[in-house]
Image (cartoon, rainbow, N blue to C red; front, side, top):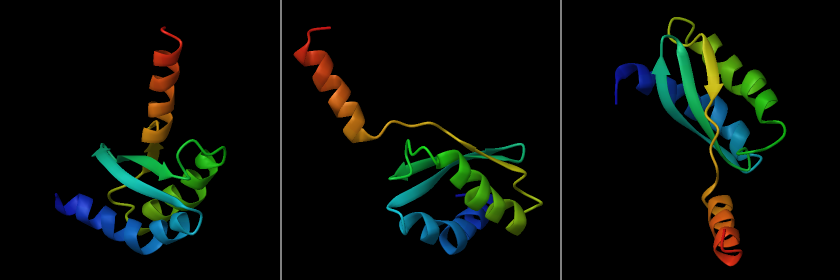
Length: 97
């Protein structure tokens, strides 16, 4: 893991994850490109209607404040939970589509 990602993980551990975990959520840093950190919101945060607000008010706010030299913006990579993916595959199998 690069030093930049270690710094990001430290801020996530100290400032972001406790807030997300309090609501059954989690976050994974995906990659950093040109000052944009791409993250995946997991658990209860994945697909939550408030995910954009959570990203702006918690994730991006904490990271840009703590690491202004490194992170200018945080973008959420949309993911599908394993549970939802399995449900979709089951529906397709059951309906022979």
